[in-house]
Length: 100
Image (tube, rainbow, N blue to C red; front, side, top):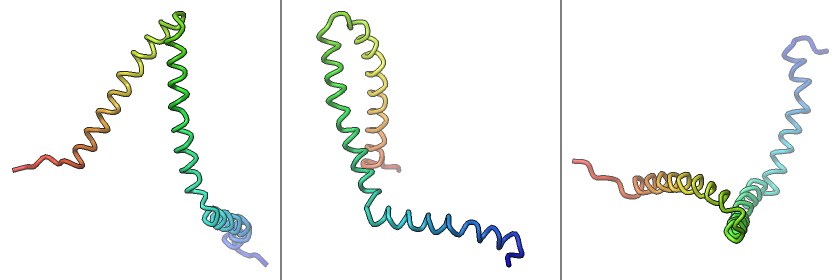
């Protein structure tokens, strides 16, 4: 007979813990974390040709010239800043400035 609140809680959460243990075991056996990483990489890699096609369409038709200009004004400063921050972080880690 269950007497304390802690025993009741333990009794009710036992199936949940068993299910979580089984879930983690299946994730580990199926290499799901590696597969998820591969899927994310391939998905991001496939966006590059899509963006190239969209920009080519914008450049081909003169009716999209104002949209193309707005996209350029948004994308160039944003990505240039991100790349500058990335490269400065990499250069700071790889080439530390000597201190005297």
